[in-house]
Image 1 (spheres, rainbow, N blue to C red):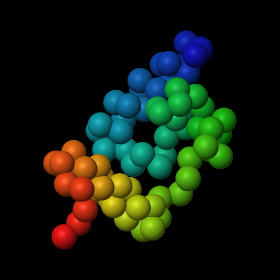
Image 2: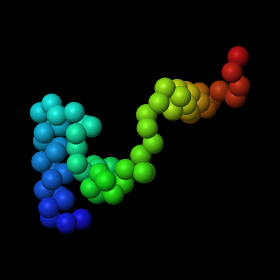
Image 3: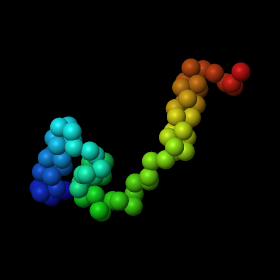
Image 4: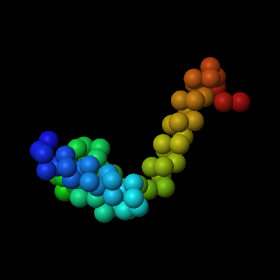
Length: 71
């Protein structure tokens, strides 16, 4: 990571905490890169993806509680 990228990530983190929408970032916090370099690595957020993620959370919690099958 270059110094300019590190400074820009820190600047945009502060701006985001101050109220800037995350969509306006020019850096990617998750990949520590410029946003245009990793744009194809991010899948769009859809209702189906959210529901699938919530179902997976439920499944993990269910099994962690020791349940074998749903009633």
